Image (cartoon, rainbow, N blue to C red; front, side, top):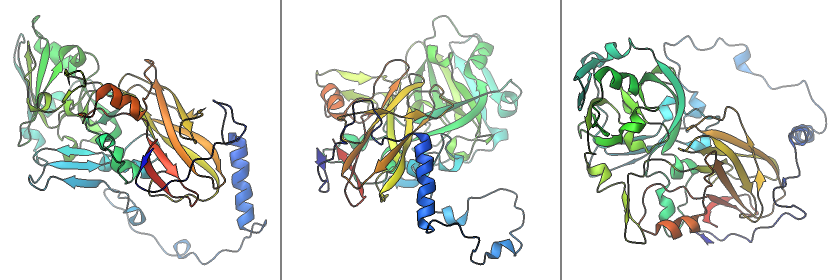
Length: 426
């Protein structure tokens, strides 16, 4: 085990068989325990007395045109890592450790920009479809809004998310600042296949070259079979029009595939016989493997999970807790998530919170009684295609140490007897 701080040897729960619940608790016991704790803190009695509450007697704030989070939640923000040499180039991370459910608020969706956020007037933006088509077409945003719209939930994950896991030493920071280049939203727009049908795809076409309207003219290649399957020309996010940092007025949604393909501010689609071999599919997203070959066009994001509560930055108190986190896979639905409290010696299946949808965040939960012993917390996801989230040692053995993208190894948090958590390789 590699770690930054000294971690006591984990205590293996006694009398627990693999697959059993290490907490010895079910949902009813968890709720009963919570009631018992409440009674204990009030001396076993419930009192009607309460301190003066001024908000019960003073009129509140007036109506506003657009709601904002509570001032008390101002700490729930994206963490920004800018590129100091190139203003506008950088990343902002979703605080996964501060959120619940499966929907990421639009204002907390992670960002990856290469040359800043363009401010594009929607009435001046157009989408050009050309190349190996029967006819070249140009669509205004008003044109696209006339088509039947479709809505779905889906995650977007940067191919470089979690890449600190390739480091020799585990990075000590909060869960969302390690793995928060992944977010999940409700997206609404026009199926890309509808627009391609309008243009008429030539028989020899095999790829789409996608280009954004930002100052770097971001462009990448997408296989035609994926484009005609489930891709969406997204106009809305979480019920409202896209925000500028998420691609306003138009972006592409490529469910389950690496984030770089979900081109923001989409302005051009060219159908071609071959990929464009742009920077983000040659000098990036191409990795040397131990056998001397290189991985390229890996596309699909692997099955993945992590415990978000508790996680580094939190201090645990003894008693009943709910271990909870997120799982997702580009290959489809999450089939199961298992949790270990002893570094992977035994595993317990967690409850999957519905809905469980393809290419979407899935929330998992498991009650656990912590009695002050040292522990190593892990989660392991399996998707409906049979893919199992790998241990870090297995991933490195298969992919070598030259990796940067598609890191999806099991994440481990060490819990010491003082209730402090740290990121470890276990």
